[in-house]
Image (cartoon, rainbow, N blue to C red; front, side, top):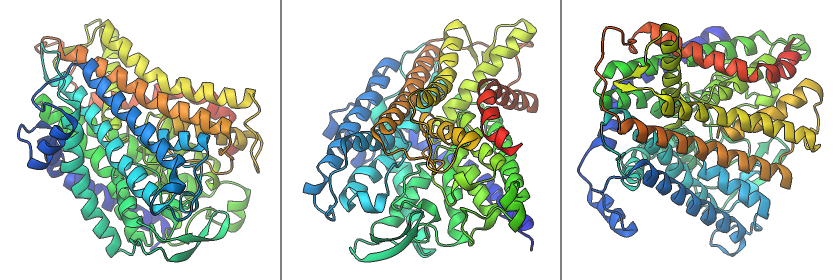
Length: 551
């Protein structure tokens, strides 16, 4: 079988599996967030933190809960790293430098998991398990909770309440993320992913050469980084390392876990608003954009554009032979279409246009299907913008699932969309203006792409990188930390304010002039608006970077 045919079969099997689980797993997610009964363990958590599970919260109270929980998490994780040498299971690791601890704390709390360091030689077991891995769960749960709050804004009428953040956080973690993570870890261990706390040493071949490292809790961290679309890995080589991703079979499982929750959440949207067709339309938009991206990324990498790939006949630099070109490209597309950021190959070694696709996936806002929760609320914001544009074209007041889209709603949607492009472009310009854009090996268009990729990844809370640029300096750790922080929480505030505005409205009955938002025409419109907005915003930067290099 040819590489192209094998790659196509790999993708088709993933599509089939995701279609098969969309309804049952989506219904499970719906039951987890919409049920009224609380388990004994959940009630114990509520008593521990002093929460009344029956108390509803306005969007402002909900937002303060998100921000307070995240702020405490950042402080705790920062202190954990700074005092690492005094902790049990530290493995003799030194304390993490202040600017690095800040960057890592923000990175994992914002669900970015950008790693400026080599995990196996910087962090001890306790920090990895009780610090970083915990955030892999709860930061993902925060994103899902915010998405559910926005959906409640569409589903509810004449109320200011969006649910209870602490209840949502607890339920999502205990009913969804933990159970699936346990099953996923067992599956990966059966596939050869290691899970140990033996303290034995293994020799791992990493990007910088052979290095002695200490074995650790790899399987559990591997599955939650994929399930929660987190990119942080125990090893610096991430999912390219044979201990984390040993075979093509485990590679398939990891991509499936990356896409499982984001592609199932639109089912929750449809169930909660009482119109499953609306959920089908949203997941269709995600699928159209995702399939286009996977196809183009594979095409560019298999075409092997560039002097060296053409000379040797394949673009294999930076890729694992056990995955080959196609399965590496599919993983790269999946990890940048979501907020995962995990890698099984090095994006900096991709062809110019293949690398541009990974960059463009993040510039879409990671909505196809996006991060856990973040992808859904980002796509719903784009749906609102599309309805507004369509309303302007036909001269009607825009409406979406029974809610009128007025000036307040469109202002909040516009602010949401403008946050990440502003951070990306201002951050890239600041790096060049201050002389922090210099790369070790690459200059010209590729050097620009490396800087642009770093700020795009941080601002969109992705976590992957073009690894040819050194980002472990105080300037880079501070700048990228700020981008991760603002890129996560400013959009969340705007989304929750939008949810509160929608929840207070009276439902608007559909009329003959209402735009049908469950049909293929609307799916095409949302996909088109998404691509056009991104092109208008980022095309000049892309033209100076990967497009110039590719041409």
